Length: 595
Ligand code: AMP
Image (cartoon, rainbow, N blue to C red; front, side, top):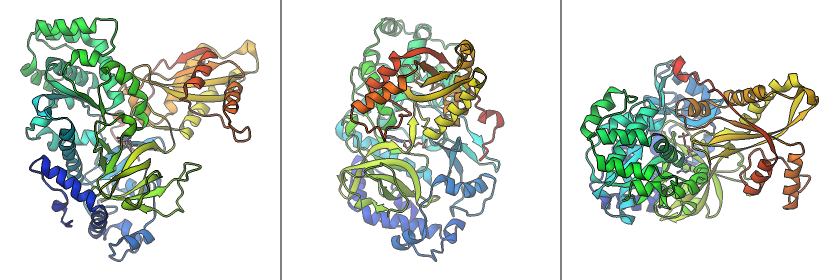
């Protein structure tokens, strides 16, 4: 593989060229990796970060591995902070940092800021360009209709030094790569750019749904990034189908959609259509919404959503609403880097494996201890082509701005495509609860509980045990926290008001991605506190012991998902409380990300 940047990023003439490219890079995975690393090190040799480790111009793997430490975000934070504050010197990258991508992973409660360079857009675009040619092998004819994709931008902020900080997809949708994309019959979306780019999530969703309904016959595939996002769209249809039908009947746009760009573009689309309004009304007014997706969009062949990792919890609900349409997970990516694609997109969700594309970054793998499931810095890292089938690893990447960076994802090798490994996404390290893109860790939950339980001091009451689960039966899903209380004076039991207040204090204590999901994206419902009878956690332990757990090693699980345990907890609930207000989410108000 050539080392010139533009040669790393080919432009394809047709599907066959794409498939050949995939074959080439996977067949030569090791050589491609050598070249990618050499190119990264050559270009960034003069950066402050690499200079610290005296590579002395070396670009080979052995020197790199012996001199450069494996790091986490926290290790890089001082460097990132300087860039965010306006230092334009080549700190991490020889290329100017064009913006920060805000990861849904957090550090000290705030989103992580990933430095990005202009050229990263090309690499992301390249990965996107591989998806449809692969899909076309399995499902021909997708050029004969449209895709209904619910895509959204989120608010963006500026760092003190003036760089934009925003999620990677917001950056992509706002780029010309997306906005001015050339016509491609395989990628015709029902949603106009104006609707996708509207920062108001209600107006954006309303317009996208309305367009999707107008195009109901043409829609061949329906998608969102995550399964939770698609279910939110279905919930939206549940709530607003009457208004949507009214608009279709009259050819007008609901007054709540006041965004001038949307109003302007909808003129092209709106037309009175009684017959269409009648069909939608007749389906949506039925009590039973089973199979609603295929009833409204009868030609939809599959759903394109991520249902791997934390999103697997939504599979039964998606099946219910879609009558079991295939669920296609096309890619595995992050703010730091886009990693790989699913070369067998119609497989069952439990079988999904992503083939890492060796040209995207330099990849290394930290073996997981098979007993504890944890990773240790003292073990040597394994190269991409040398991972072993069946083993689990944490992904470590080197990009044009991050060196030997631990992503935090645990992956299991399921096989190889040529010499590039295929990985099953196992879990995100340390994440206890997740509804949408939020990721709450055990220490974060513990600190939320600690903060809320302080409100019980004046009632001489302690939280003796707690656990949690992500309730995804409601749309949007919400966190449920179970508390067993020790009330020392039964005449001074904590009031309902205070227990509701505890819910809000917990929400206030959770990280900014959670709070943004509650406030801006409305992707997470109000946190629920369920107080259980005394002795419940002892029953939980008895249950675990009866299933073979050792009494010496038993620890209360801080998150439960096993149905019998959830049923046991639910059968012992004495009262439940919800957060009555929204937590603070003030990134927008300050207009600046403080790192
Ligand atoms: P972000 O930090 O917001 O860029 O999110 C990236 C993270 O989302 C990854 O590191 C994974 O933990 C998760 N993720 C992305 N794609 C997938 C996928 N296809 N399946 C499971 N998890 C994914």
